[in-house]
Image 1 (spheres, rainbow, N blue to C red):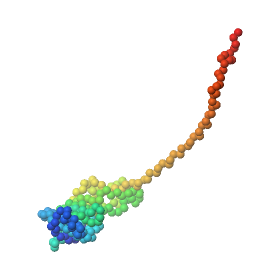
Image 2 (image 1 turned 120 degrees about the vertical axis):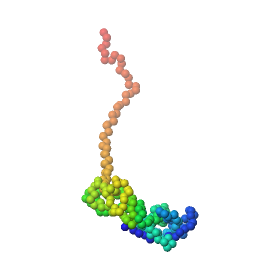
Image 3 (image 1 turned 60 degrees about the vertical axis):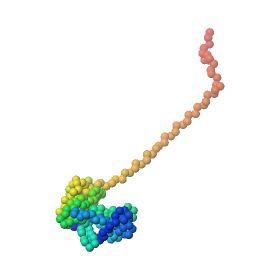
Image 4 (image 1 turned 90 degrees about the horizontal axis):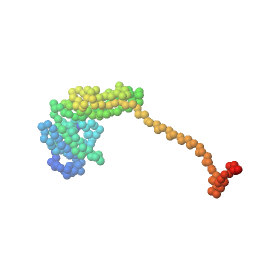
Length: 227
């Protein structure tokens, strides 16, 4: 069963960004509650109480017993806005649920065990999908889904079709991969820099320059004299 958290809210009359800023400055979180047959209603909650109650839990799948001025209703958190810079919540949407009502929500997937491919072959377990969407009665909402990965060898995967949840309908596509065991990463070794062998320089050939005033051999020298 899903974890249940208790929170207390007050009705608020102001609306708009100015009223919301005043609430936050006073340590309150603006909120709204709605649901089948319920008109949307503006609320506010203690910032500190919410931080304590929601710390370390899977918010999407937790049941909230929300007390509004003495009346307690069961709700789910449909949207929770956090401050982008500092700790704290900016706004929260509650959805009231009733007995016998089917609700759609996302439930976290928790992998259990160490895969065979990790133990014996140095592989790495890669979790691709961390939540799956289901449709279920409020009283059967699971806190999480545990999936045994002990027998996974390298290259093997588990898919949504491998998950079974009692009293619930899985809405996430059956062929979506939940996790896989990938081979160990091999670091590439940079090739050694090639050693350049310098060939010995050829000796420089020094020629004696021909004298510019060197006289040409007289014509006919070396030829036989006539007659």
